[in-house]
Amino acid sequence: MSDIVKSEGQGGLIGLLHSSHGGLTIPQPFEKDIFLFDTHVAGTTHIEGIEELEPQLKIDEKLSFFREPDNPYDKQAIVIKTEHGVKIGYVPQADNIIFARLMDAGKLLFGRISKKDKKGKWVKINIKVFLHE
Image (cartoon, rainbow, N blue to C red):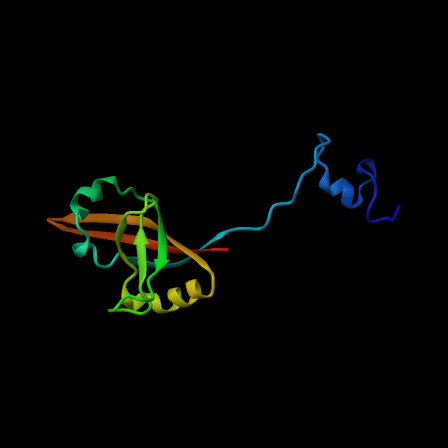
């Protein structure tokens, strides 16, 4: 047997794949979330029922981003939704050009709520934007 592929007790590749309990351990791919930017959710005043939704939004809650290239007002539009699929607004147009390009290239971006304020019917939601690699 070659020096690289040896039986479990002898080290080598086979030894690396087997745990100390005799089972096979498959190496997991390297993943991490990279913080990119602080911003806020734009357009909350146009979301019907945002006042009722606001108490359910929790600090550090994960938010999903979806591209909306057919948006008539912004070709780089990125919709922001809760984990339950409820739309809460958009990434601000001033911030979305690079994020839209990353998403169009197949990168996974998401947000996390960092702060929220309710002033009358207006809800301000601050978020942190992350790249999942």
